[in-house]
Length: 66
Image 1 (cartoon, rainbow, N blue to C red):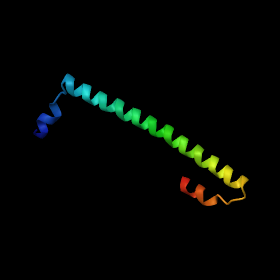
Image 2 (image 1 turned 90 degrees about the vertical axis):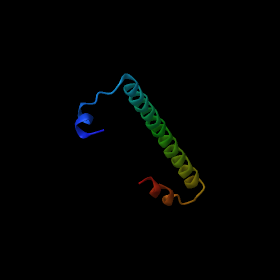
Image 3 (image 1 turned 135 degrees about the vertical axis):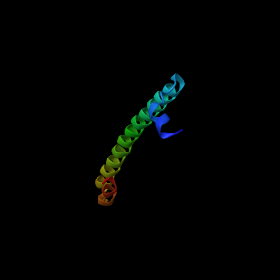
């Protein structure tokens, strides 16, 4: 497609639908990743609590959160 025709190209209804579908899929994946991120951080804190209760040193585990 030439540069001039690219600037004047209007997406068809099916192209717009695909873009919307991809957008919604990306948003859903980002939301899922945010939830999983929170789950992993909570698990790390629980493991650190367990380590401290048993007299272990958990300092190295927290450096991975940076």
